[in-house]
Image (cartoon, rainbow, N blue to C red; front, side, top):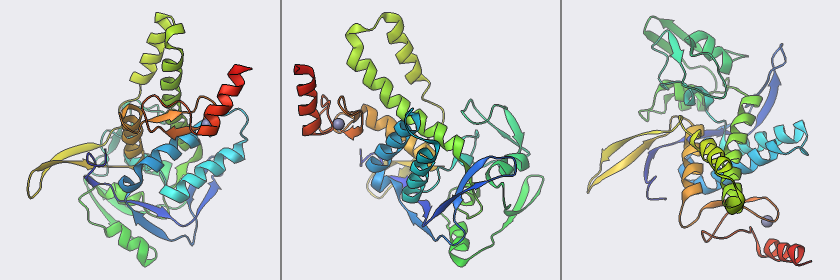
Length: 296
Ligand SMILES: [Zn+2]
């Protein structure tokens, strides 16, 4: 799978600290802390860990036993390792929405409207401090403010739209309930796979169809790609327009991977990377524990 992602426009940014802030109408956001330092990294190099952590955070968010603050802390912990998800550029029909008057959305978990004005949409992600963007018709200009590292981030010229670099700015924030919804979605897919193959023989056709349909809903927000002509041969070049889309693709690929698929432990329920397709337990001790439980 590493080979598949050999070429990708995937650089992402994580800050050294994140804080939870609340709007006057009580919506909780996650955003970089005032003095946090931004650090670019390449998610493709850590894709197995990211996918595993993403479904694990999702499992925790689904858990009845976890408290709200435990869930928020898990999401914050994820951001500390990998940055925010980039929801702003993940859900519109195009990540390059600034030249237009309106932003359009395919079906998604977060926004019900089919479209909204660019200004209103940006307010969802910059609820506390706006970026200095002047927009007139299809023309816009963006004056980057802030410390020199932040200015540098905005000027990273990697061919991706400006909107993506805006999500790297200190002012950019993501709603915690939206992030939670997304993490749960990834965990849900892992669980459907688990229950489908675990109970396959005991399921009615109707139940099987239900499982299949819930997987089919796992679509939409995938990265785009183009064919790059490299020195010796053509290659797929992935354009990750958000970390969210990257994780979506990584989780999907790892659910279906032949050699190192992501699975859920039959004993403890933890997500793990299986060494073999049929591995059911995350560790030897879990397999032994399960044996003891079922023998007695
Ligand atoms: Zn286990």
